[in-house]
Image (cartoon, rainbow over all chains, first blue to last red; front, side):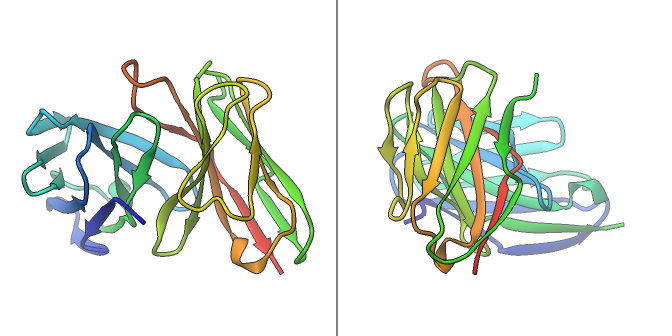
Length: 110
Length: 114
């Protein structure tokens, strides 16, 4: 069974707007990661947040983690057409396995 | 530095045929993984390896076998392909826990079983 579940499944916004994606998970974690996948390509790591962290920034990305609610959010500010991709959250517990959610498909209209 | 390389990129099999997918990484990573990606399902872990000569089952291991004879290579085998194994397969690798959690992915193998 999948650990992470993203919401929404799909999101369409205009260029310049902010995009927010959410992820919920079921069990305790060591860290939560977000990955991006362009159509027909492999996944690329975006950002990692550890279980003892609440917020993390990287460029136009902002990730929050609420371990009491077992949820995380990824905010992409000032989105660009090039941000069009699928975004996945992934969780790790014991350091060996990383389990992925079903992903959010983001479409940014120019 | 090639990173993670998967071969082949595309393959069409008939039901019952066998094949091996090869994953090679040049980053000296200890951990390697095989995932499959199906529409609307995200990535599901098939098998993984935490070092040369070791393998372990993931979420959906049935119908697949793996081997890690060399640290840089991780092979995924289908002994008797079934249409349900039509999918995109991704290999990934990473450094051990405590050093780095980030997964590095190959570009995928699109497999169709007719």
